[in-house]
Length: 173
Image 1 (cartoon, rainbow, N blue to C red):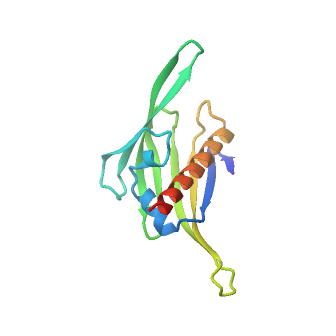
Image 2: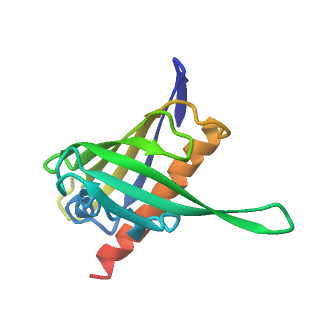
Image 3: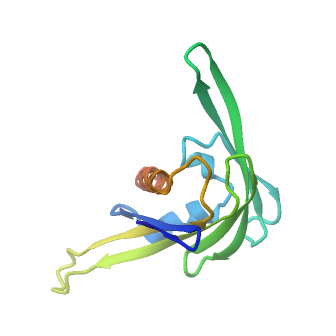
């Protein structure tokens, strides 16, 4: 679900994890410089300045983009510097913005929330399910060459994949 308002794009994606609690999943996001563990597109992600777990932390994410014109393939390195602007471990949420990049973002701010789910059915037999929901919302300027629907689809598919990977990591502990 995304909207175009006053020249800005806004959207939100969610994924529900039934086999992992919010307390089990939050540390994966709290470790802001580990994105390469959860998204296969990201080749590397590391701290370039600031303190781990503190607003002001800046990470550099790089990924390779292979393009082909039919006769040969070319690998281009794409990158983005992203700054942690807010982190609240009690509420299990963080916000970050893209500072510099060669991907096409002019402005981009995202908020990630890890929300507990306790769907007790109220009859006291304990068969309600427990888990969590990850919510990724964003506001950005339009991205040249990328329709809003495609960008929203990318955010959603990335979050679905991350959720599966994180749930698997929790279950394999």
